[in-house]
Image (cartoon, rainbow, N blue to C red; front, side, top):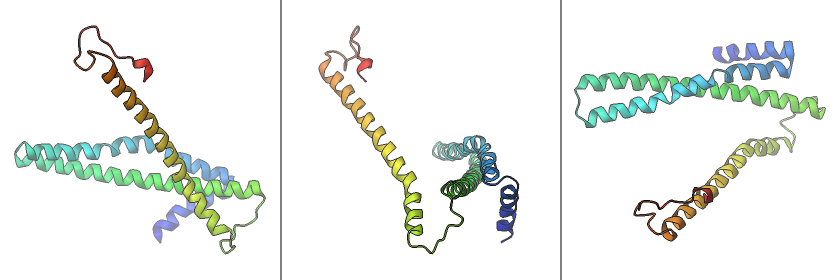
Length: 173
């Protein structure tokens, strides 16, 4: 409960001072550190792989102890990054909800109304719908490229054997 109070005090203060804009600025402030946090998040798997390589190469146990310590640090930075991402997402959602209610002229959002909960659920699902549509589009493009590469290997004599002077047609991809 102490953490909830500590987190809600700045949000209340920013909303009182600047309304939804204050909450949005708080979200941007949290997101401003996200680049560095995500960069350090990539450090954990690298350290973990280094530990596995050290073990497979049968290096001294002192090497494994060092990679384990580095792996623990990587896990800590990953957890910190996720906390910042979740916190900024909450603030962004709050700012969006506040802006929507202001733009729509609503004075309150009643969770007990029959249309509110389905609307919240549909709204929460929309990012996943758009993400899946994007991934499907990327998959379709990748499959087209693979088909074209296979066609070139099949139809251009000497390409598969890497004969001198035989080149692929990269413009078709």
